Image (cartoon, rainbow, N blue to C red):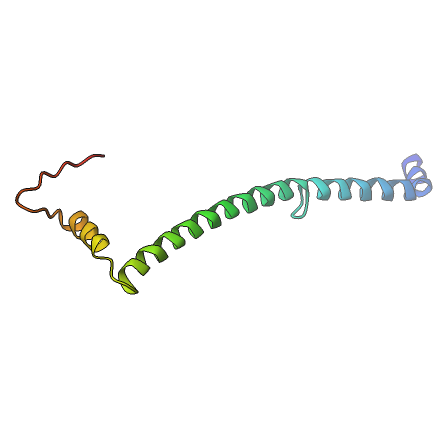
Amino acid sequence: MKIRSFFSRKKLLLINIFLSIYILTNLIGGDRGLLSYFEKKKLVVNLKLLEQKLNKDLIDLEKKNSLLSEKINYDYIDILYREKFKFGKKEEIIIKIK
C-alpha cells in the first residue's frame, strides 16, 4: 500500500525522471547523439582528404591525356614507350633507380 500511494502521489516526478533519462541517453548515444556526431565529423574529414587526392590524380591524368591527344608530344610518348616496354637503343646504358 505504501508503494502504491507513493507512486500515485509522485507520478509526475517519476514521469519527469524517466523522460530526462531517455533524453540524456539519446543525446549522448543515439543515432543523432554526440558520439554519432563525432564519428560523422571524422568521416567528413576523411572524405574531404580523399576528394583532394582524387582531384590531384584527375588533374594529373588530364595533363597526361592532353600530352597525347591535342598536340602530340613525342618526348612523352618516348618516355611511355621506354617505361612500358623496357626499350633502349644499342648505345644506351639503362640504369634503373628505385
